[in-house]
Image (cartoon, rainbow, N blue to C red; front, side, top):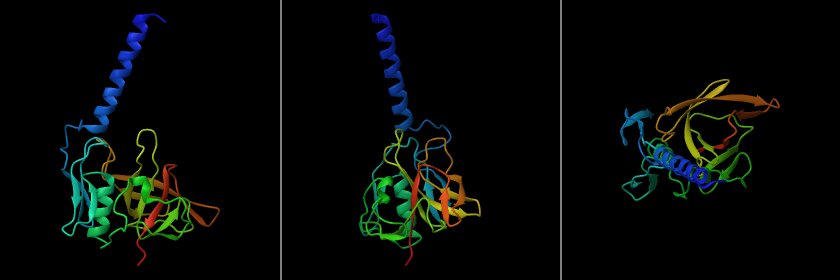
Length: 198
């Protein structure tokens, strides 16, 4: 390979990496500002975050409970559980994918979150207010977490914070019954859901 070709390939790589970093970390959407309210569920606000890796300071309650980094997905779901469901998690830290513990069986207690955990698929149909957890992938190694805002016969609706600068705060995902007894959310990134049962 000649030197000019290698320089061109290197330059393209640097530009691609730079663009990827900008999209993930900065607000490139001219229609919203970071911290702007964009949605709500049960009077708990969803705030716009810009790039999915953009972070501000940690959000703590008056009694010192950690809600997470503003305005990441984790911060919204923990704030929702704290404000609407009066729930504090024993382990108040961790990335979105860490909310799900693969060693816990379907329908058993997740002690780190003090919530009942269900696998995808599960014998328990998803319910409104459940936390739904998405595994990490090469574009987002931390995973994602949202709240189930509606459940219909053949789909669920989720409400989420920080889905990306141009993605909506609400999303519809297909729901199916498999083997006549298990409910499966039709998104391969969904690993399960958590529920407050007491």
